[in-house]
Image (spheres, rainbow, N blue to C red):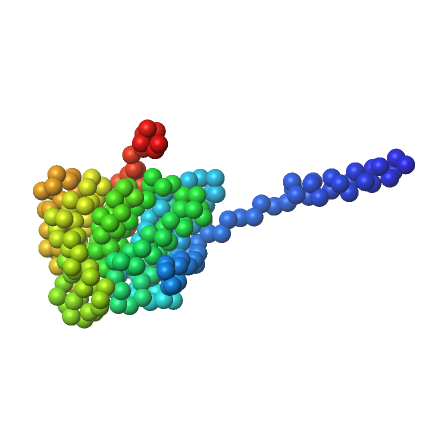
Length: 281
């Protein structure tokens, strides 16, 4: 009878003991593929999860918006360089700063821009990432190069209070004539007719959101005057915007910007102010 009791006890406790000693599954890391649905359309995006990701930690999230060279629907093209994705792929094992955040890389189909549904799908991809990885909603940042630089300031102005900081590179407010002629579309027409298509209005809408603007002085794709005028409008509105103009650089400044330790120190230090308990009622 005693042997039967011992056998029954082993059968009951065996699975529990195995479960306690079973290896813990490692979280998925790298550039993960995801999708998001807005209305009737499904958009692809990537999420960068660092190799040393800890599920118990609440990470900040960087939303990166690509330029026209990465248009597509393959969920691959937006990772091509030079941009934040290519910088992370090159330096993530060499510089610890790239293990301190998650990054979201939405993709726009041609010839759409980061406006209207384009802006909405990017923000929804960001929100899905926050929910999936339990990220820190007080430390969300938006950045982008070229068309993505336009999108970065626009999203920060369109969604006030969402981003702790914004960092446009080689972008601006008003599109160059060549872009208008090369890629006409109803979306572009709508973008140009909305109130934020004016430097003063954009500056006002950005409020006090911390902003660091980057541009190359020899940029032949997006005139450097775009960033200069936006920064001048911000400063006229009392905004302490930071501005870096690379005197010997052209349009593709991602490698300089996204490998600068000072940039990451500044960006990751930004946090939305805590909301008082009385304001949440």
